[in-house]
Length: 416
Image (tube, rainbow, N blue to C red):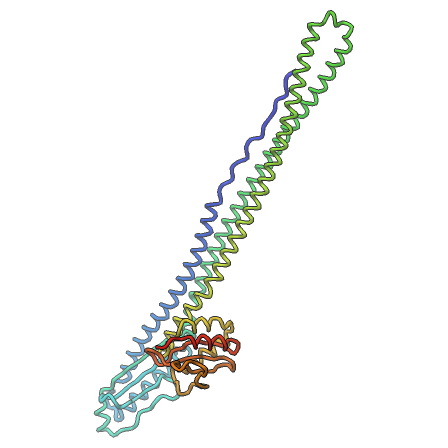
């Protein structure tokens, strides 16, 4: 009887490393960061370019309006009227929100013919006599144009670039979605192929078991024949010895098949345990990666906000020296309304310090420190002193809750 053939399962196809997918995700994140950075740069430089173009436009227009027309009797008043009508009728100023400051002075450099920005409150010139008016010509013109970030024109530029940014990000998201769907389809196809291969292996194992069952049946029939031929042992000793050898060989084959079956089961269990452990480690790695990314974003966001706020405050308020500690205090307020009230008080202190409500000089400090306190929003406090270069130096921004640690910090300031 032939020994039943054994089949060993072929090794599973190697799965590709996750390196390319990880690189693609990094590339996608970089594209998003570059798109947002380009959006900010385009918006800032577009507003500055628009501001420069409008400055040239209004300078040329005001200079033309300040030209004396043939036959004009009261030239200064006519110039002031034309400049005022030009600014009041400009669509860039009224609905657009552009701030234009025009100054027209006489040829002597002291007499103001017009000062204003196209709104109520513009300075109208006196009505001098003709002789004096003739000495004021030709008039000198100075124009200043600014495009605030809350103006309609700036908002239109911002909206346009935002629409382009959203379109780029949406297209990138669609591309990533299609790529992930393609990878999922490939993974599903690989899983189906593995399932088909497992089914074929199971079929081969079933065939082996059937052949083993038939071999056992044949061995039982041979044993029965040996018992029936016991009477003929003398004549068939040679054949009996041969049959005993065959029986021993069959028994050895049975033991070998049993050992192979047990080894196969042990290998299957080890493979399942290794696969489960690998999946658990991959899940843990992905979880740690998400936590690291979340932590990096959480740590980078306050620092970026503090840098942006410091740059904006130091650019807007030219009369104030603002310490980094004060900028961080504004970021730590966590209340947009309270931060706006604090910035409003900073603006008053920078533009018109006589109008700022200085409560009192802070007491309880070393004699070499002369620090004042400016209140805002009921419980807020701005601590400042005389600046080294500019008018005031902002030291701290706090509330009632932080008054004690703020005073301790101020008391440790060195003598300058």
